[in-house]
Image (cartoon, rainbow, N blue to C red):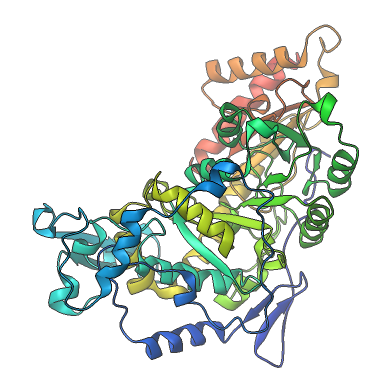
Length: 544
């Protein structure tokens, strides 16, 4: 069989606990009261007053953490560069701006009268009617003025958003993202924080400089096939990357443990990795999704070998409905947002009692990549170190992005509306995935090409049986990959070569792979693209 059923599907049965929580067979618990608790906290705290460059942190907005332990410290894992960073003097001075009656002559914050934007207008969908036609016919028009706070009692406007801010991002978005993290992740230790980012690629570069130092011969462990841009971020820093074997559920914990237990720094040319970089859900490029059992086993290996985990989760909310196969009825979508959240495989940060996980999240795959807005979740110590770096690097995300997304997420949709949007994305990507899989069944030689239906993400990993190539004994695997790729381009289809994602470039390829995405092309175009890919494979294998 060319089609391999995924071992990491995530359809769960729901039960109700006596405390109103929804529990799934994967162990996730969603407290149905959390949305009401957040609303009650907001009512109690009143209108959020946060002006230009207002300082904020998650503790201002999250619920009680009484009874939760504190995270351990990670000084031994941090680089000298990270440990020596001091707070930005001018950013710290902005803390005084909240004092009533204060006249500031201290900071170089331009007057808002010099901003050439009086108003920004948006038309956005109203939950749960998210289609483009629904938005045209009944979408809501949102106006963002320069002085909405001063003149209309608003919470966030252009005079605030377009000025300088803190590296943590605006207090307005900080509140929304802190609450969102409580709803979805609920870290089990007390001193967790978030910091907004300019997206996960920029965040990763900062994180690597916080944890990895070429002068002490540091290295990173990751999947044997990993996100190519992450690899290209790591290599110029002089940091070695080592790939760990994977299967249909991603990283194999036993293989990780074997590698780390038997590490030989001399032969490897680097000391044993103290950082694990992983994409647990819909991994790029393989599409593999780690089950809850697998995540727990990997976390246990990390504890045993004192690995700090960098959890990159751009596809976390693109966990799809189980693949049922052609001709079978579609699995109904979750009926409520509570059911949707409960169906998600728990994140590493939600099981992290040590504070050994830094989760990278982003709006790039679930809203718009051009926003360049994301966030990291981790312990107070790690987020504070990240913040110190961001103060003199990115200085925080774009004010345009923050105010536009705030108006959409907080003021228009709210948390429930945003979760409904994510539910809508689940079904959209499920249908896209199924269309690509149908095309593969129709057009690919299944005695040569095999695949596992992905449970999450945007990618299908196509494995080609190189042993059946007529010139397999004389032609190198890399030559066959190049031949098929060139034939694809000539035939009018672009797929990604597996070798682009190999973590250890100096090692021979463990197999012949190509990555296809179902994220953008229409069902009709995906069908034609896979037909062209199938032609290229058949031509290389002499099957035409």
